[in-house]
Amino acid sequence: GRLAAPRRAPSTPRPVTPRPHRPPRAVARTVVARTWKWVLSIVVLTAVILIEVALLRDEIARDIQVVMDAGRSGPTASDIPALPPVVPPAPTSAGPVTAVNLRGVEACTPGQSCAVRVQVLLQPQPEPQTVTWDFTVVDRCTGETTTAPGGTVTVPLGGDRADAVGTVAVPPGDALAVLVLTRAPAIAASSALPVPADGACGPHPAEPPG
Image (tube, rainbow, N blue to C red):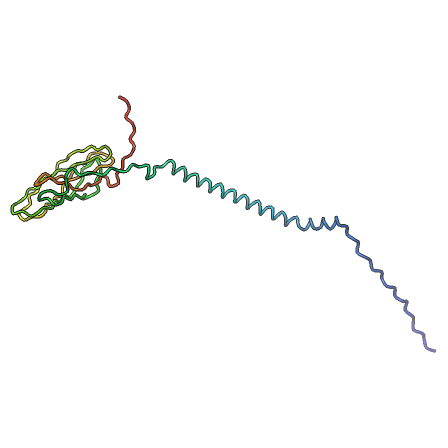
C-alpha cells in the first residue's frame, strides 16, 4: 500500500510584545538631554556679544572723552585775540608819489634783518627826482612804533618809479608790521608787511616783582 505523508504540526503564532509605555518624566529627561548643548551654545554666544558691545562702548566713550579734553585744554580760534589793523602813518599817495609798495624778498623773522624790495611809483617830472624813505615797524600787540633806516634813489627826468632792494632791522616781537614811509619828494606810506606772516599776540607770563 501507499505510505502516508507525515503530518506537520500546526504553527503557533508568536505573541506580539507591546512596547513598554514611557512615563512623561522620561520623555522630558530625553528632551533636556538632547537640547542642553544647543541652549548652552546660545548662552555662550549671547555672553560674547554682550562683552563685545561693552568693550566697544567703553572704547568709544574714552575716545569722546579724549577729544573733549583736548578741546578744553587746547586754544581755539575764538581764544586767540584778533590782531588790530595797522593804520599807515601817512596817506598812500601824496604829491608826485602815486603809490608805495613793500614786499619781502624772503620770509622775515622777528629779531633779525629782513631783505625787502621797495618800489615808489611817481608822476614823471621834467627834472630828476630824489626819493628818500625809511622804515616804520609797528608792534601790533603793544602798539609801540620804531623807525629803521631806509635808503635814497635818484630817478632820472621822465622816470615814473624808483626800485630798490635793501634790508631792515626787525626787532623781536610776536606780531610786527613793517611799512615804508617816503620823506621826499612827498610823505606817503606803503601797506603793512606782517612779520611773521602768521604772527599772533599770545599771553606773556607776569614779570616777577622787583
